[in-house]
Amino acid sequence: MFESTLKRLVADADGALGAAVLSLDGLVIEAVDETGAPCDPEVATLEYAQVFKQLLAAAEEIELGRVERFTVEGHKRLGLARVLSPHYVVALNLPAGAIEAQGHFHLRVAAPDLGREL
Image 1 (cartoon, rainbow, N blue to C red):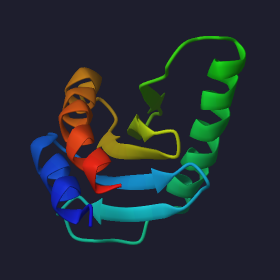
Image 2 (cartoon, helix red, strand yellow; image 1 turned 135 degrees about the horizontal axis):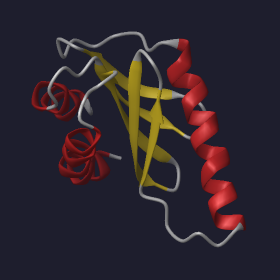
Image 3 (cartoon, helix red, strand yellow; image 1 turned 90 degrees about the vertical axis):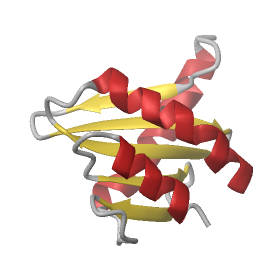
């Protein structure tokens, strides 16, 4: 369902390690690895969905406005996500040191196609 768009996202984002569409309820709807092949998501991906849900709730509580994207940066990886709907996000996994703005650009470009597939 989302595979072709996720494959394109991974191919376009330099050094991408994978991408996934996640439900904010903690389900991974579809995921691809760095080659664009379907894959089993890492446990961390499931945990991210729960964190994103909590952050969206907190943003609403403090009247931050509409949240469009997230960045989780670590020593080994850079996790980026873009909100597709009130219930779904697309996540992109990049190596540490990747250009964050480029990754968010590719997520923004892919989001409309993914949103139509929801």
